[in-house]
Image 1 (tube, rainbow, N blue to C red):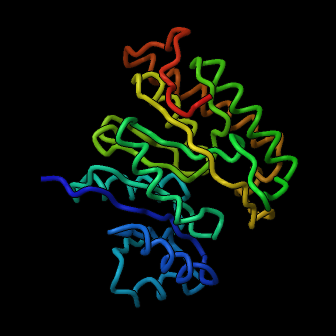
Image 2: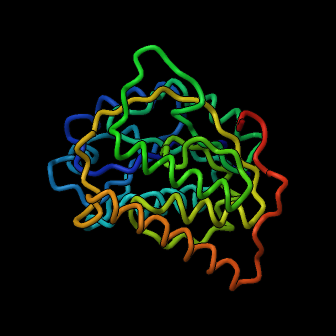
Length: 250
C-alpha cells in the first residue's frame, strides 16, 4: 500500500535558512526529505542533527537537477503517491503545500507560477532572469501548445507514478526544461497554481559561463532541443494544438 505524500527539498549551502525552513515545512507535511547536494558550509551537519526528517547526502555538489532526481527516486523507492518539491532558501511558503497536494489529485504535475497572480509584497524579479524565464516559457508554450506562465518555479507537486516514466539526465538548473519536454511528449496533464513572487537570492550563481545571460539562454534552448530530439528518437511525437494543460493553467 502506498504512502500518501512527501515534501522534498534540495539543499546546498543553506546553513542560515535550513532549520527555520524545515521547521515550517514540518507543520504542513507528514514526511520531509532533505537532499544535501554536497554542502560545505555546515548544512549537512545541521541536517544530521535532526531526527524529524529523512536526509540523503551527495558526496559532492552535483547540481539542482541531480538533487531533484535523488528526491524523485526516494519517493518512488519508499512508495509515496505524491512528492512536493520546494526550495530551502525561504522563497517558497510551506503553508501552500496542501494546495499543491490537493491539485495533484487531478494532474501529473502541479507547477507553481509567480506570474499567475499578484500578491501584496511581491518582489521585483531581477530583469535578466525575468527576461530569460519569459523567453523560455514562450518557447515551451509554442512547442507544446501549452499556456504556462512560469517554467522555472521549483515549487511543484508530482504524481509518483508519473515520475517513473521520466528519464531525467540534466543535473543543473536546466533540468526543468528536460522535464517539460518529456512531460509534454508523454501526454501528461499539467496544472499551474499561483504562488507569491519572492526573490531572496538575486546574486545566485548558475555556474561559470552560465552566469552570462546570453550564454544561459542559449544553453537552455539547447537543452530543450536536445530533449525533444531524444524523445523523437524514441518514437514519441510533439503534441498537436490541443493543450493537455488544464485546470488553473490559463
